[in-house]
Length: 97
Image (cartoon, rainbow, N blue to C red; front, side):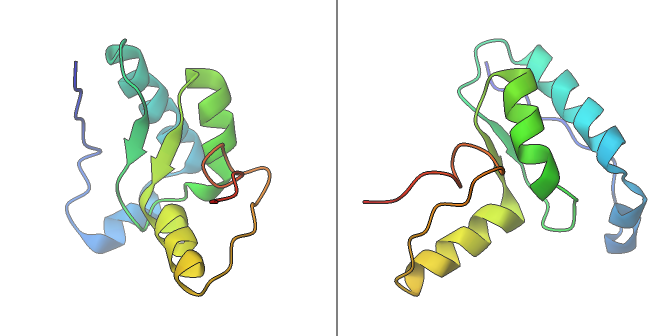
C-alpha cells in the first residue's frame, strides 16, 4: 500500500517552520500508516533531514531516502568519488561497487 502525505507547506519560506522533531513525528506516522512499505521517501530539499535519516531508519525499520542528502551523494558519485558516510542511514553508508 502506498501512503502519500504532505506537511501543508505551501511557500518555500514555510519550510523553515518545520522542526526536526515535528518532521520525525510526521515521518513515523506516515510509516505506521504504510505497513508494507519498502522505504520511506522524504521529498523536499529544504527540510532538515540529514540528522534524521538514521534515527528514522532505526525507529521505522525501513530505509529512508531524502531529496537533498541523496541527491548530493549522487553528485559526489558523478565526480568519481565513492566513500561511504556512516551515521546517516543505510543508503549513505554503503559503497557503490
